Image 1 (cartoon, rainbow, N blue to C red):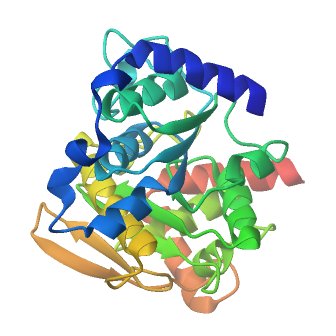
Image 2 (image 1 turned 45 degrees about the vertical axis):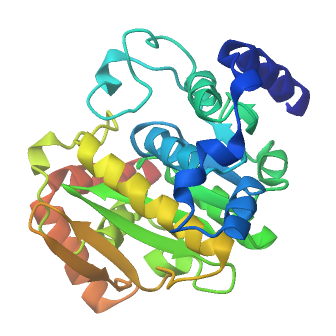
Length: 315
């Protein structure tokens, strides 16, 4: 996989074709004043891994590239389609049918031809997670909401290796951000995830943990659990990229107040508010959590339908 990824990077570098006129200090000189010169060099020497290059992941890489991050590991098994146009940065008529990893690498190299990029066009898996995380300083979670098994695998692997993970997800009109540090609560502890929970319960725990209120701006009728589809706006995805890039800056330069679990923040530009995010009670192992689950199932029946189908299949 590493050899294949290297070959793909070389191919993309040829597409960029502007390395001869590029100067890193000039390209990112306007960062100086908010970022110190030594800090900019730290960013240049930083490797950020972004698994998932859709709505949020595609926005993340653009913010990070313009921040001056010098190395990337990109993973996504998907290709761009017309249905991605409303929110995914790399989705255009020219990229329909093309690999998201290739298009994303081209976008980064068009900004910084010196960037080092490794591509994983098959996505991440237990078979390649070691290679994907090797040499990585920070991970930004861009995995699709419904891919809970992959997400749990990623967070566990990062925790084992001492790698912080930034979770910045679009919820309604806004963005929820949580940073999972190796010495803080784990992803599973924070969201109360256990193997005996149904997939629907795990997804619900994640959604509730990233939302400031039980009632969401999202129309429940627009959520298709079986088709793994839900509404998302480009504005919310871009806001996620802004807050995630800032968290990376704080982590790399070791300054500022991190938005670390168990305390997160939800930015709501629609109402002009910022809400604190706190850990929710376990949806299956506490009375308060079971009440919360019951209320959420009533408000978003799609979660309940999926939950009941899985319970029936277990019998």
